[in-house]
Amino acid sequence: MAAAHDTEPATDDVYDPDARKLVEAIRSYGGGSLRDAGVEAGRRSLESIVRPPGPDMRSVRAMEFAGPHGPVPVRVYRPRPAPEQNAPALVWFHGGGMIMGTLDSFDRLAREVAESTAAVVINVGYRLAPEHRYPVAHNEAWAALRWAHDNAHDLGLDPDRIGVGGDSAGGGLAAATALRVRNEGGPRIAQQVLVYPGLERRCDRPSMRRFGDSPFLRAEDIDWMKSLYLGDDPSTDDEYGTPALATDLTDLPPAIVICGYADPLRDGVEDYGRRLQEAGVSTAIILYPGVGHGFFMQTHALARARAAMTEVGALVSARFAHLA
Image (tube, rainbow, N blue to C red):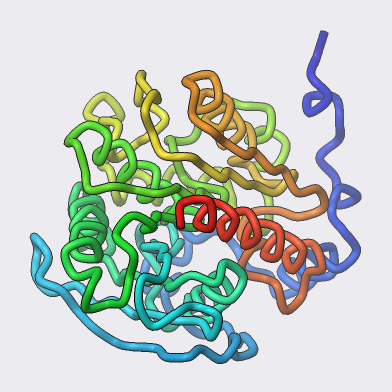
C-alpha cells in the first residue's frame, strides 16, 4: 500500500493561505534557479532580504575564535530570561546551502531561537563554499563547539547544557557535529536541534519528486550546492559531509527534527529522525503542514512558523531544564 505522502498531489493547495501568498510573490518576481543566477547573485539576494528586527536581547556580543582555518566570527545572543552565569546554550549553524548566509542575514533567526528557547545562542560565521569546500565548514562547526565548552565560564554557560542546532545546511552541520562528538568522545552535547537539515545529496524520494520545483528550494539547486561544497563525486562522501550516510546512530544526543510538509527534503529528514528513534535516541519528529523549506525564517509572514518557533523553543527549553 502506498504511503499517504505518496498519494497527495503537488499543488499550491498544500500551502497555508499566508504561505501561498509568498509562493505567488516569488513566482511573480520571476526568480529562477540559484544555479542559473550563480553564487554571488544568490548571496546578494539573500543579504538584500529586508526582515523586521528580531527580539531585543539582554546582550549581543560579536566575538571570534581561532579556528583550524583561521579566525571564525561568532555572535553571542543572551536573551533576557537567560541568567548571566550557568546558562544553557545552543551553538547554532545558519542555513544557506553551504554557499550563502552571514551572521547579519540570520540575525533575526538567532534572536528568535534565543528568545523561544531562553538559551544563549552562539551563531557561527563558518566559511562558505565554493571558496572553502568540505571539510572546512565541518571543521569550523566542530571547533565552535569545542570553543564554547573551553570558554563556558567566561561566556556564562553551563558546560553540561550546551547543545547544537541549525537550519537547512546548518542543520546538516549540527548533525555531523553530533556524530563526531560521539565518535571522538566529546565534548558533551546536551541536544541537537535539526531544522529541515541538509543531510544527503538529492535522492529519488516522493517528496523530492513532488516538491522538487518548489519556489523555496529546487532539486536542481540542491545538486548544484552539494557539488560546490562536497565535490562532484558522491563516492568520496563520508558521514561528516553527508550525515545520512552514517550507518550507526546509537549513543547520539537527544534530537528535535522538524520539517515542512511541502519541503523536497521532507522524506530524507523524516527518515533520519526515524533512524535516530530506532537507534534508541530520544527524538521528536515534527512535520508542519502548509509550509515549505525555509519556513522557520518566515515568522514575520507565516502563522505556522510562529507556532513552530514557540513549540520547538518549548521542547528545547524543557530538555535544558531537565538537565539543570
